[in-house]
Amino acid sequence: MGRSALVLGANGLVGGKLLEQLLKDDKYEKVTYLGRKEVNKHPKLTQILLNLDKLDHFHSEFQVNDVYCCLGTTIKKAGSQGAFTKVDYEYPLKAAQLAKAGNADQYLIISAMGANPTSRIFYNRVKGKVEEELKKLNMNGLHIFRPSLLLGKREEFRFGEKMAEWLFKPISNVRLAFLRKYGPIEAETVAIAMKRIALKADKGIHIYESEQIKNITKR
Image (cartoon, rainbow, N blue to C red; front, side):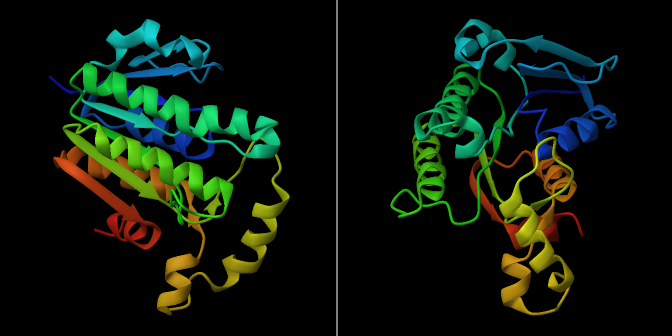
């Protein structure tokens, strides 16, 4: 039988690209999407629309090979630090707990460059804290992706990201280590890397920085 996957955050920049990758890959027989908004229909895609506060009610859906968490927001969009924490910390942690309970082969999550539980930057601190808690779960396989600035077409306009994209994109291909490390990365590149890593099915805890993510897609 082919692989099965569960995707959270398929309406987002990376999540949408990831869903495309999974649906066109013959190695995946079944893909399930959990989220608030409907996505494009596909013969091997099951969509379950729900409020993510109700994840516990769908614990059986986490009995799959690969659980992909592409959830993420901004404080501006969320409206408060508390609402941001719910999307970027509480939901990903709950999903991981359900993945472990369902004996999923692995849990793959998008974090962020600079994630650090002791960071002075709230965004990086939340990302670091969720990483810290995920590591404690002792899952079969945990894969954490830390991309830098994501490039791609979003539904909403983010001035800060557009400004950084304008500044970095012209120099992202310069062969200097500093620029390779901090330069922007295409959302599709992250999605491809996540799928490739999932298909390797390595056990244990693995963290992929932005430059490593790019290199995975070049193999």
